[in-house]
Length: 309
Image (tube, rainbow, N blue to C red; front, side):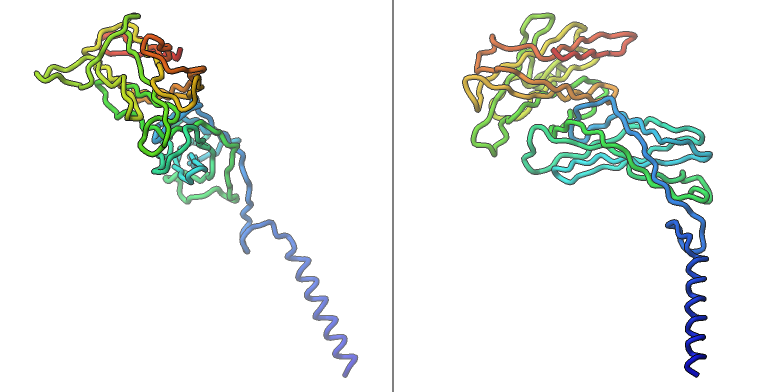
């Protein structure tokens, strides 16, 4: 009887070993399927290097191989300092490996962010297009990753969209905002064709007349200075914005980072960053040129060519 039991146990063990050898082909696929898993390395690019809160920018996404069906790729913009992100789905046509699109940057935060933060662009997912039936890639399941593209991020708000105007807003490091014990203040001088000019603060005069150019150049209590050009009324010519300091945290000289946030009539937005080096407290006569705007009108359409100085 003992001999029979030993023989029985040996047969059971052999059966188990034989079963393990036959099934030992696990490759990460669900039981009963032949689905293979593969990670693709994609690429995301943008012409921008500096962006602002909620800015819409151009992006290009590229995958390493084409597919016979439409694919959709998810791009992410992530601000690690405040854990905020936006997601954009980009469609890539069948047979293609890249596509261009636009993407909205995350908004700012209620906290007092540093003048310079970062936003990281990356690709995070891939799938077949919504119209592809059945959905999914035959025989494979893909994941998608990419290297991160790191952009300088500022929480300054862009000027509102207005197809009748070109608007530029000036922001600078440690401006007045009501919470800091010490702040900088940098004002602007506005020049038309090289001649210093004053501009009204409001869009319209008391009699209802619309001002061709208006805005705020001088202030010691608010963060931004903003200038608006009315397309149909502002004269063609070369306009220059110059900066000077009326108050500095560090004296006698400071290096102050700044950025201009521009909104064009076609709703394109751009950020123009720079540094005012060795800035000292001076009157307006000591201002330094920082931005040039050339307005021209062609076929009744206003154009603005912006150059950082």
